[in-house]
Length: 142
Image 1 (cartoon, helix red, strand yellow):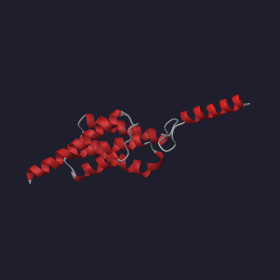
Image 2 (cartoon, rainbow, N blue to C red; image 1 turned 60 degrees about the horizontal axis):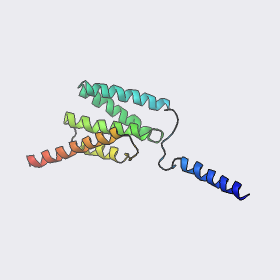
Image 3 (cartoon, rainbow, N blue to C red; image 1 turned 120 degrees about the horizontal axis):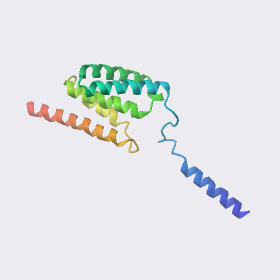
Image 4 (cartoon, rainbow, N blue to C red; image 1 turned 135 degrees about the horizontal axis):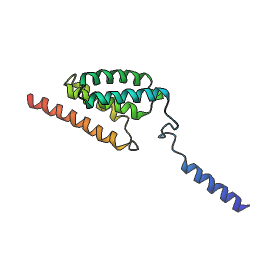
């Protein structure tokens, strides 16, 4: 009897430890149709950015931001982080609304966790480097 109770307890511990923490768990399962549409739009925005069609990329990124903020609870944070990071990078590239660089970098930074893919952390470091460069340039002009 003790062996059965011990085995049951051990099995419960093993099963409990294999389940992700619900506070930090990512939504599992396939992406929703909304996420797929946003990923496609994000890919088009990246293509515009890579082809140096920066005004088109900026317009598409603004549209993506509005869509992602409206659906904030149902989207994976990785998508929202990428949108905010590209907005910060595009505002730096176009030197357009320079205070927005810090704003979007901070918005993305608040969503990043250590479990996220390394590309997001690397791009976030680039965004903060842009913020630092802008701050340094403004001090030099003063």
